[in-house]
Length: 321
Image 1 (cartoon, rainbow, N blue to C red):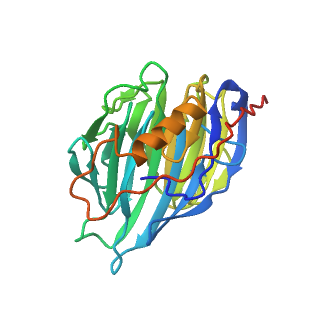
Image 2: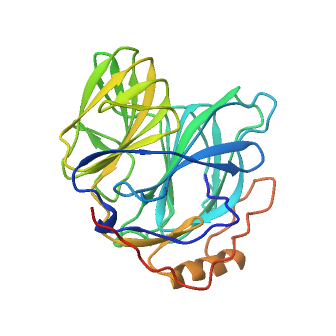
Image 3: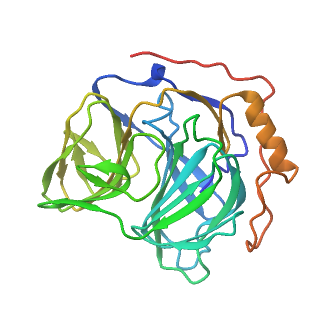
């Protein structure tokens, strides 16, 4: 999935200045964004005052939408660099195509992981014959300096590890949780897990005190460390925790996101993560000129043109709390 905002502006993210070094309960409200003609998403990251959680730099939640008589998700070819895209579904299917020639349908509870490295382009769409509901999350992971220009590649994993306890089941999507490790390739210390809670269940997830964390509510009613978190909202939790209390009022689905605070300061614009205004400007020129990012074959429609890049480089505005 992509940032299709035609009024996109560069933003500085990463760096310790944005990290809260102690446990907090900071509820983040989503910004509603139209994705194509028929899909609206709730954007949780980047958010006003909260740019990243560990290496997680972008979080969209969408659905559940009834797309019985709709085309569903239709995201034309667009570019990425310096990041990984993590596709995660609760309902529906998404057909992924990319400039490497990958063609893969991603289904519920399967990991679609695209590492852009130096440059890639891809499209995402609901198949012509699709399920009634579409519900999921799209996330980006920033790549650190040592790996941000690696060769692009795509991974699809259908067999992911589970962490279980009475009334709770956690699928490990990225990184490691309670000794269970995802097969998805990660380049920073990170965790991403899909947590299913039965109504009335209480659980305590083990956490790493050196990580910062957030929880995205996907469905149902649940309390995270005593805070009600409704579907489409996210609770930022800061650092310094060894466990996280959860309580389900009804059957509920949550996503736990966390990782070591990202040390490097980044510039994010549209669908690119770089380190400078000049690097982003070069990526934009390369995409508009048809070089470097390759061609997505098989999608019925033209690629997305990049928005205009403001001419003045953005200066960092870090904060310490």
